[in-house]
Length: 164
Length: 114
Image 1 (cartoon, rainbow over the protein chains, first blue to last red):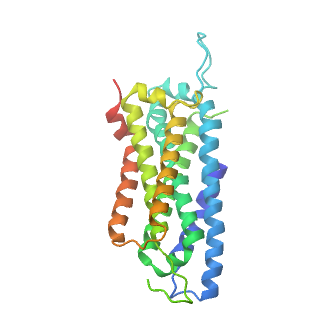
Image 2 (cartoon, each protein chain N blue to C red):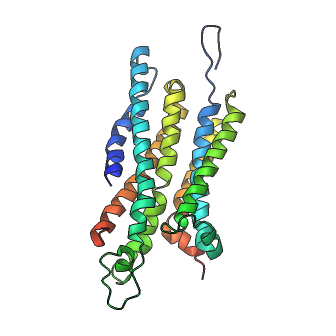
Image 3 (tube, rainbow over the protein chains, first blue to last red):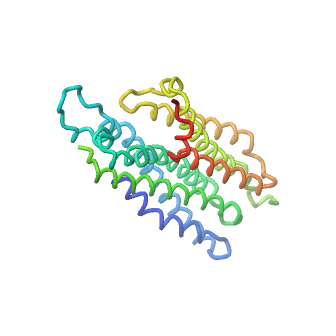
């Protein structure tokens, strides 16, 4: 969640940085500096997104989906998935919320990596070609929406059934 | 784009390679999610790491597909200026929208194995 929050916070700066990346708005030196800051920002966001999905998938998710022992009367408090599924009122948090979160989150780092690579290696083209800037902004915004959806669902699910 | 001796030429092929491969990687991930939902044996085959289940396989295979497509497209397009970037934009947007639809639980629930 910390990585997710960092990713979300960095998005607004990156979005407006990309939006304003126009050769008619910036001097040569200003464009160079803007591209340098954008490269650092987009790679920072990309690393956060990868850390969030890798830790989420391989550290947090196994805790969440751990199976309770087959002992009658065992408390489900330490088994969030089974705690949610044990009550029809909360089952949707797993069947809809967690299922969506675990999958949509993986789209964010893939899209963010493409944006970071383009900004770093081909930023000059983004200055000159509005159609490229638009599609890169679309990828960037979609990465943000995916991360935001996963982050929000994660927070809500953690409230309904905390992962300890 | 024109070039002179003093102005380096920038090709947009590598940019489109990054865009299309990321979109294809996302679509591949969505397809794997739907196939794993539709087939228990496919889901089991994607169970690379038991504590995480088939999510380990879906994500690993999608990342491999994405990187493979990126390498191939980059090699093919690195010295090209792509004509008809409007078509490539449409392809990228459609692939991403398909990926978003494919990972939406009510949609992949339609394929749930009985």
